[in-house]
Length: 273
Image 1 (cartoon, one colour):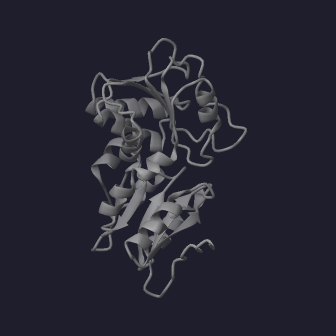
Image 2 (cartoon, rainbow, N blue to C red):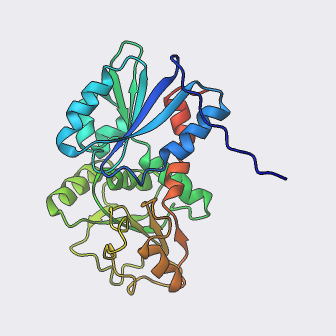
Image 3 (cartoon, rainbow, N blue to C red):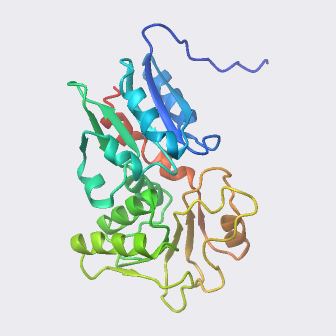
C-alpha cells in the first residue's frame, strides 16, 4: 500500500490570510495546527510565518493591517507586550495581563487584541489530568506569555501562585496587577530556588530551553516528589528542563499542549465555522 501524499492548501485570489509574527520564527507550531484546521473546516484561508524583528514590529504590523484580505495575526515571542499598543481595542484579558497573542480585523476595519495563552495552558493542564485548582504553583517568567498563564491559573483557582523573573521591575508590576484582582494569592520570589514552598506544579514560561545550551530556568533539586514540571516552550518538544525532570521521576507537561488548548478559542475568536 502506498502512503497518501498530504493535501496541500490551494492558494487562490480569494484566499484569506493570517500571519504569525515572531523573532525567531522557525520554532512556531501554529501553522501546523491552524492550516489543517482550515482544511477540515473547508475554509479558503492560510496561516503563514512572518519573521519580525523588534525594531521593525510596528512597521510590519501597520503594513499587515492594511492588507485587505488579511483577517488576523498570531503573535509569539518577543512581541506579545509590544503588539498590544498596535491594536485599536483590547479584550479584558489583555487589560489585566498587559500582553496579547492574537489580533482580529473587525467589520469596521479596526483591530481587536486578545490573549488566549493562559486559558490554553490551563486547558492543556486539565486535559492531561493536572487540574491546578487548589494547588500551589510556581511560575517562572513574567513576560507576555507568563503574565497570561499567571492570570489563567488564578482564574482556575490555584491556592497560591509564586512568581519569579530576573527582571524585578517587570515582576513587581505583574504581581501588583494580579494582586488587585486576586488579593492574597500572589507573591514574588526573590530567587529561582523554591525551598520548602511545597510546590505542586512548577511552570517555565521563559524562553529558556529553545536553545540546546540554555541553562535551566529553575533548579530541580528543591522540588518535592510528584511535583508536575510544565514547559511552554514548544520546540524542541523535549526541552532540557523536561528531560531532566523526567529523569528525576517528575510528571512532565509539554509546551505544545498550550497551543492545542487554544484551538477552540481561536475558532470562536476568528468565527471559524
